[in-house]
Length: 449
Ligand SMILES: Cc1cc2nc3c(=O)[nH]c(=O)nc-3n(C[C@H](O)[C@H](O)[C@H](O)COP(=O)(O)OP(=O)(O)OC[C@H]3O[C@@H](n4cnc5c(N)ncnc54)[C@H](O)[C@@H]3O)c2cc1C
View 1 (cartoon, rainbow, N blue to C red):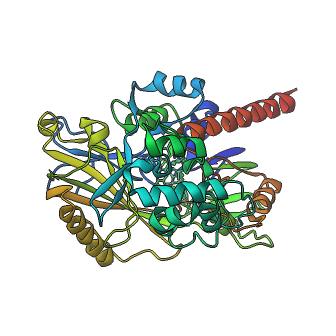
View 2: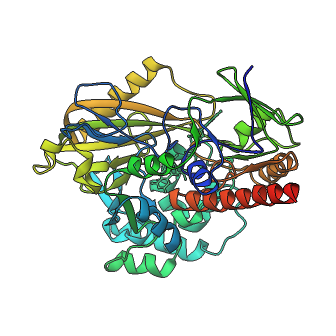
């Protein structure tokens, strides 16, 4: 077996590993043949199944993303400046809704601050329940937290059915998390029940690279030492060796890992006295189609009920026409869409099931009048998409400590089992890479002196 020997290695060339590799100059080992991980754009010509990593010269392709629409929200000013130094950014004001298919009704997000769209008796019940329940902090599970904060009426109408789909059935057994996605504010709810509501939440404004997300990841990668096609198959934490699926290996003294925490525990064979946090997967169905007569103008829409259990539909081309083939950008008669459906861990559908689901999705969107004829359809699979915890579980802390004791430092969204977006993942990668290269530098100077 061919062995390479470097003191510090980085695993994974998603945005976190790319940032760490860029700032440190350390080698990054990546399973795929391209950078970006979940944050990768690709291009498909209508009627052609070959994924292109760059736009074709004539521009006649839909742009899709592996993980569905990835909009850059939040982020420190310095990180946004770093991103902008690599690729120009465009800025957008969020347009997003909840869709109730049985009534064909859209209610702007967040539902609880836009009650005036609902029937008067629902408004009255919802406000009364929210006023009475808002201070209950004893909720153990996400389902309890949602009901405690929004009341039974809104729970039955939206929060229950939506979170059942979004969490792949886990909402009654996982701890509440990411409360800022469902902001609770009684005075804003009252205001929105009678008057105009103001935009709230973590992503009211977002940015996106004018040349697509790939422009960002490819530019970072081009200045970094990435070793592609290196899928980690096993790690001997005691001997400090990584073994790759291609038969090669590498020795290390310390590892920066951006791989999901549960997968790292499996790869190292290390264990802790707690069950790992549940991590549903997501099937993303990317679609290029002719626009239907009632296609919304939203950037994305939350769906509590659908024929095959998808929970969100995003409209790339409602954010920016550059997601459409060049000749279709002016007329806006076509639309570029992503549809997300969550699956419990280990429940990956077969390729024939994915084809069947894709067909159901198309039928549903056509029935709602959102699309007409489909030009291209391309599903992708995110193995570890969400990172939940069981109430009271200390699995995450134990797993992180166990790895760190072995010289393996988890970094970023999936490695540290924390919900965060692209900008914060880049920040973590830059920080960890800078710290790692500084430590490596000190070691070199100390051993040389
Ligand atoms: C459905 C969905 C929608 C999202 N939407 C947004 C959004 O709109 N805005 C936003 O800011 N964030 C969004 N996020 C979050 C965003 O995707 C993450 O913050 C970001 O991708 C984290 O990057 P990462 O590099 O840490 O992880 P990853 O992108 O997962 O990178 C890990 C890398 O490791 C590689 N790898 C995995 N296993 C191995 C192995 N065994 N050997 C070698 N390499 C391996 C992978 O190929 C990958 O390149 C979304 C996430 C999901 C799931």
